[in-house]
Image (cartoon, rainbow, N blue to C red; front, side, top):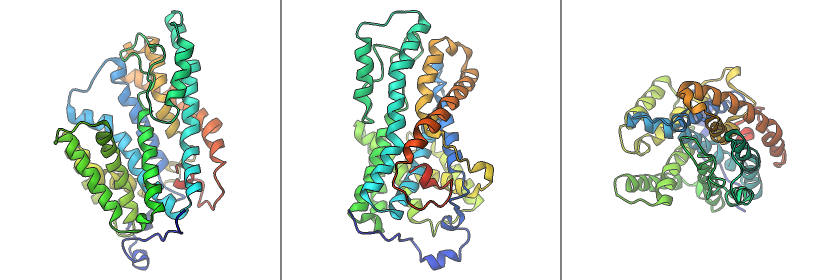
Length: 372
């Protein structure tokens, strides 16, 4: 366990207090839109999945890249900010790991079990076909093999069947392993004391940039390098924003500029090479500036929306809903997903998070309390 970390800012805190426009002063832990932004991004994932799950695609590559990647990247950028903030506030290994595990694993495990025990059998009933040989064993295998966040098995005895994308029950869960790997990276840097240095996070960002460039332009196609650098660059970008929060101004024209850079960079083969930092700044800046009470939602169903959207969409597709077209399919998918995600929040996520060790909470919408 490391010694208590000093939360160094890039400028002297006394000077930062005199700059009302810097992120460190603009962000109100009680009133921000981070929960809302995550919900919007999770909904965008469901909407994007509605395209391939109805047998369609987006032909314009810049639009396809933004639709398929930006929502998840925003999740990682916000997590980078909040998780580093969490360690800086409570630099204790056990408490840090407990909070991360309780936030990710219980709902994830319930989703796996429901997919294997409910969604897959229901899909067979919808199609009116008997269970394939070995169905029960494959259902158990689906839960066990995927239980540690590394998704090894996507189908259950070949189901779902009769959909535009057969044999894949959840195309969203695979990113969670990378999210948790980023958490462990923060823990490692925190334990050895590197989070207190000025160079560790910039060095990590440079390494991720090199990885993205090597994967995109260097012809190096390694699963770990490609995905590790892809997710790492936006996570570290969020961490960098936290590191320099007391010197980064949050102004509308800068947010517009960041949005323009993100949109323009979508013309590149990998927009993250240029857009990671602007995207992190945009998401975190907008979330800090939007302080309307209705935007500071307390019921955080973004995680449930993310993990349940795909299997529920596959059930709809099994029932023939893929023929409805993308707009109607997406609308019905969102309605069903929100309902299940709300149940997940109230019955699984919120109750299990109570097992985290008690510490002072800034407010009911404190990002650390609801996310970290």
